[in-house]
Length: 408
Image (cartoon, rainbow, N blue to C red; front, side):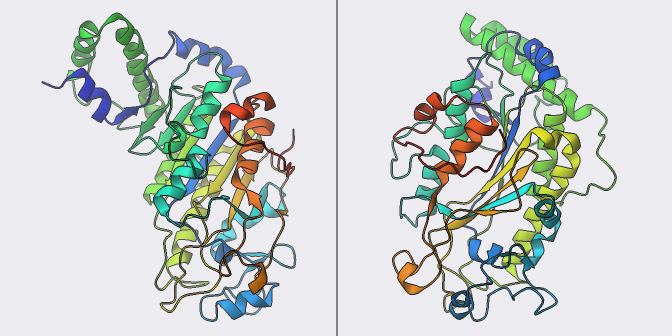
């Protein structure tokens, strides 16, 4: 017989914390008239090549270092960089996002990343999601610490990851959910009700109370999945797992269940061989990313007025291509921020250049903006965390740089 512990651990509902306060749904309904601002965090796992995604086409060194995989300068080829400001350009597969740049709701932070120099995917992802670079002992993630620092009522639907496992950034004591999809967030078949009743009868008092909230969260998301979709016929998400995860996020966001932080991931960004430039492996990943984000923004519609979409990747790639037509693990990278509150139409951060004497370790784009500066602005200027809470959200770090990415 399936035990209660096994159910919590291995069901399609992956719940990090069970300490939900009673009647969270009633409180969420009461708050629907003044719904919270929303952050949608997108992790590009594998170390995306920021230099070919946001192309420094105005710098000759870029073309010298990448003779066969560089993206052509604007106007020099059919598939060329899309000019942003006379120095930087978007990869041509990012064309779906160019209108957001033009209407100043898309910003880029280049040469951003971690002060820790590791080139281990596992360590770098852990450091970014925990927001404690170089510290492996951190037990929770920065998004969970944000939820804990601002909780007025403990709502398990404040933080939702469209993922099979709870991402590191949402792990911690504050309630959060990880689900493969909204439709799967259920005990299948007619045995569901009897299983729930047996589960609640067998639980101790504290667990029974929290478990009741868990099952109610399950039913809430099921109702959201069953509700008629109002997505415009012109909104076409990629059929990839990433595209479908973003579609699910839009569904939960529009259900007004109190969602504040959503998480999705895009994978397979580690291109050591045959990366390509304007076309090829990287271009396919960029195409999936850009079409997914553009569809999400269109689907959310007026909700984008209080939504920020933030992209990140654990580190960048080496400035020079390798002998296999790819790029090896590097350092600095590019982050995207899109939404109504964003002061867009700018590339933020100090650009260090690609001259040999400017490269980190003589080979990588240097980091001039700590990723926590970006996270801190999102937490305070967008999500509304008090600046006094930053020491708890980002332990061991004092934010000294105000980029001005967001309207307050």
